[in-house]
Image (cartoon, rainbow, N blue to C red):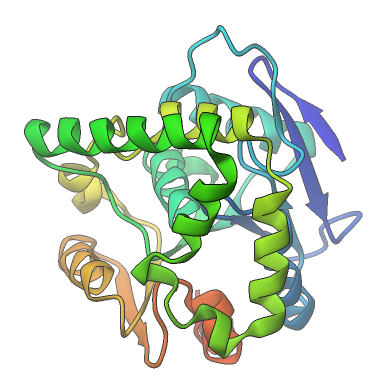
Length: 270
């Protein structure tokens, strides 16, 4: 289904007509992905769920390229989407970029959150100089996306983050590869320009105000995000951190069954 906001034409998939019990899970994918990276997880989970294409990804299109977009815009857009779907609360689950966007929405709209699941996600960059450095790096990526899209994708897939993904789940790797190749470079560049971690507000100092349950998931081989999640877990009152061994940045694809156990147990007890 399509929901049109002031900024984005959102492509949304939900596997239920009417809710009869607990809040549904809303899945948010990562950069260069689409809602379809969650297909296997959602099928096996057998739980009411929604997945949407993030702005500039899949079939969620930018309404006006000349108009600036921000994390505040995203928060308003997701609020509007939930209102249109008549869903008061969700279990919000985000991976990587989707995790950053999930955290942004959850902190700004805690009344819409039943619980939160963050995989390989960051609350942002604390220091201005580091944030500026990261945004400068992302601007170079944006230029590559717009002018040399195929070489960009080849380099992106070779990042250490994704080192073992192809070996561990060839089918899902091929599916993600096709999703990436079908992306619109202009849309993708817009998304990164406006939703880069380099311009994301730092939410580190706001983690201690979170009251709802939070599950942090990282792959054991992803040292950077294991450290980030460990620090987040220390600051969030009602949180737990699950490390999935023999997985990197994309535990939801590399170790689907272990990932499902983590999510199922979290839902069961929260």
